[in-house]
Length: 468
Image 1 (cartoon, rainbow, N blue to C red):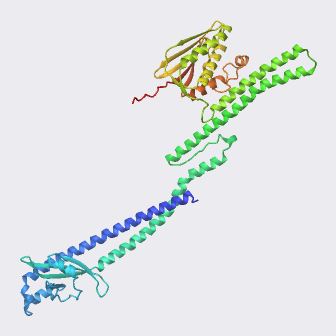
Image 2 (tube, one colour; image 1 turned 120 degrees about the vertical axis):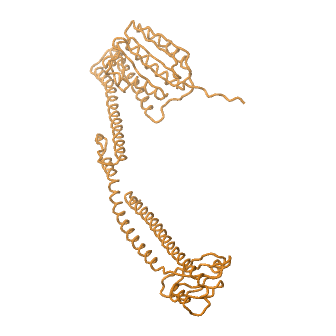
């Protein structure tokens, strides 16, 4: 597996090579076209100038050597005049014999087109040549040729290639060194994160990453990494506290059972005394069973898939039946239990879990409402949702307890909760069930006036049926 550092350097080098190659090709091609265009322009200007002289002194091409012919020869020392067939009619004094025009190029000139071609010279310097047709009455009378050496152009392009090669080598070397520095700068925060991650364990979850990176992305990565550590620390602390609280809750009834058995076995007892000991132990066993069921319920809700089976459900019959069943318990405690319900839409819910939720809320309300008080259950629709409220006239809850009331094993009044046999899991289960249904639960309380627990569930709209 290739290291990311090496990949960065290779990628930077490859990009630099591609860019330099493209740059060199464009510069070389552009300058080459520019130089050739310049040479062709000069040749055309020179050929046009010579063509005027040829036209004005045409007689000199056929007359004997006189003053006019001598003057023409001196003026056009590098010029060749051809017949339309390509045969040499006259050439300047400094002209070197060159290969004849190719048949295709000669045909183009005969049609009145100006033609450029490049030919080799004896000293290996390329020559640029122009063939300019001289016409009279729309007919080509002569073909004027003149030429120019391309040595300067070739030397210029060769020097450009050397400069580009040297520049490319320097930039590739700089890119290689720069990519090394860039890779080190870019990966230093990653190495810090790696080193921190290697040091993290359950006892050291308080360790946090401190990055001195000038890049926004790495600062955000460090923040997210630290936020993840915060969440993990919170989860582990919650699990540790949960295990400690569960062990404490289990230890109390076990201690009672053990003490009762030891006392019963210390000496002979009567049948009634043994019966009392068994009754005491049975109560503690029941408490352990209730605690175990609550712990199993919370463990099930802690998974990725909450243990609920959501189906379209009407809450009114469920609430009415449950209030009717608990009225006897309320009357036994001299508490008035009433129901205030309105027509509400269906919800997607689990019948058993929602019954458990309401039982926990009502049991909590009845346990904290003194004799002569009242507990009211309300069911009403609000903005496409179904709201279920359980209100009591108990002593209320202190503000410092409200934020933690739905935590596991948390008791607002520990002494009273233990007297009622509560373990502080009922409201935690209510919260898990409500959230598993896509809803929420909250509590509002005023000291001395009572509390209101509100569960909000999303309503369910059956899909519209399509008639055929």
